[in-house]
Image 1 (cartoon, rainbow, N blue to C red):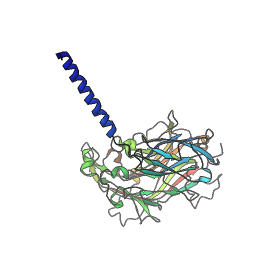
Image 2: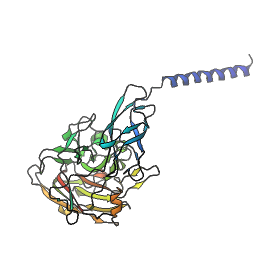
Image 3: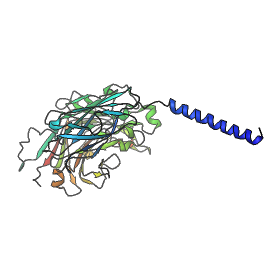
Image 4: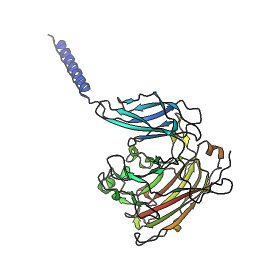
Length: 405
């Protein structure tokens, strides 16, 4: 065998060995263990009936998907189509017709590619969430303001591996509505096994009436300091928290807003206690900590595939599509030296219009609203006094009656 043939033989032998090794790697590659719905879209609804995102992208921690439709429309047989984690299967299958009338829940089971893991989803079609009317609201549309109440009496342990509390409201039909979110899922990355009272946001029994939400600015320890997030302010807001963004883009993790159809908002009132202290910001400037409390009504932008673009921590008070906003003046804040024995103080914030309010858009479900509470005024910058505490209860959203468009 000449030298040329010897070299060719070695090259071919090497290529064959590499090919066999590659095939072995492919054969030994483990099958996907994830069993999640990544996207859900609805088929069969008339145009304009589906509210909010046309393509729903649930957080991986969620096992409930709520599809919102216009009030007065009765959902019947609908076809849902899904995008799943690679290799996963779902039953009933994507595209199957099921009965969603009368807000009845349908169960879907997602099975991972390797067949070892299953996740059950509950999917329901409902009209927009309407908070319960205040006892003082007599329903006179012509003369009386519309008052909706949130009391934080309803909460439960997170449905997962963590101990933190999640707050929910009850719809007019008595169903649980998980419209309140917090950054507790992000904090769990630093202290997974912490009890509920060691998280930044949790429930306490001693509220103004019943239970209340307690928000505390916490240290995130060595891990938080390493990633430039040394503190986590307690927060609670109408919207959702995308934990997949918690480390890479934390300001984008807060997705503010829920569909809103009550009336033109004019004021938020609430009862609260606050205790804070002094801290140094990232530039070494000493500042006094205060709570952050605000509310925003906006008309969300829509993506090409029908998804909603939520306001987030970067633009929630500055976006061009804000209709009106209300923000706490820190001069209102009364700090207590002993928050355990201090009396609750009533606070209020008034909405200031930025764009004309459109009654037709309200009726069509085009508006979203958020109410935000946080224990540190610079918490979104990961700055604040460790131990700053805000207790909030008995929140009321006051709106003007809106004439029929």
